Image (cartoon, rainbow, N blue to C red; front, side, top):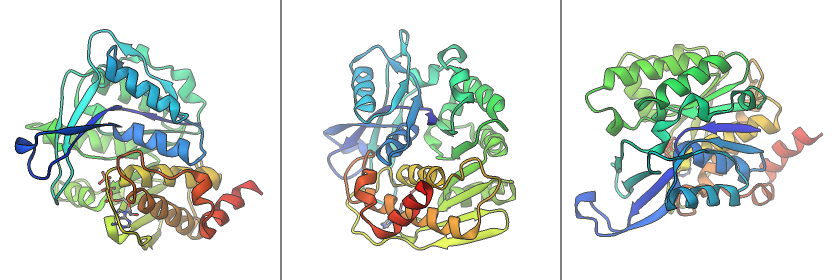
Length: 316
Ligand code: ATP
């Protein structure tokens, strides 16, 4: 099983174009990057779990029900003190606008909420940056990562949400550096890579087993040790690119799982290309459906020849 740790929340997506200030109505969708990855993995046929926290409220009921419907194992206590997280989001245009709220249940994740023995026995643990932004979730997640580092492969999607770090950018950069130092597999967007470089964080200098840089419609780049490959995009007509990065991450981890390479020290060029093509293909297909939970099921993708090759290789 691959377990994701982090926020699960309600995305309220604007139904009218333009800045949030002028939006009149929103549509409710389940979301949160680690939850999106957990659902993506389950759809791709990999046993998947999510560690998070939701409020004792109707949105918490909704998220738990939807995650379980998707086949995700939920390690998600109800918070008697705080409400389920919500985000208001405007996705249209080059610059998406987000409003994330403080004082929500996922930021209240405490050490006692997580079964450490469960995490020590999984195939990989996946996490992002959001829980670092507040306490007690920051101490909880870093405590776990430090305990698991070297025992369980750690996958990190940098996923920067500047709105959560206003006036504290330096602190965010130091936390990202700390997480990069603990991670084995790292995924980030080319914009995030450039932003970190501009602020003195040289991501490529870290010693990861796998580094994946997503390039939007230009595909992705995968690196392992001294091997670096560019993976061209899979051509589609996108309808909604929300969660394309999370679909990519889910497929990257699923590709590693099916190739029995999750715990490997390094990945050869042939496997990098195969896993990269699989991740680009799944991410591209996800952009043809609306919402963040738009990864196609493994039964559908295995109808495609190159996916069949990757999938069958691990079954031999
Ligand atoms: P986020 O979802 O948070 O924006 P991200 O920045 O990692 O994350 P992108 O780089 O936009 O996301 O996309 C992730 C992957 O999805 C790309 O590497 C690519 O494989 C695929 N993808 C995204 N947009 C397109 C597109 N227009 N056509 C084909 N593939 C795409």
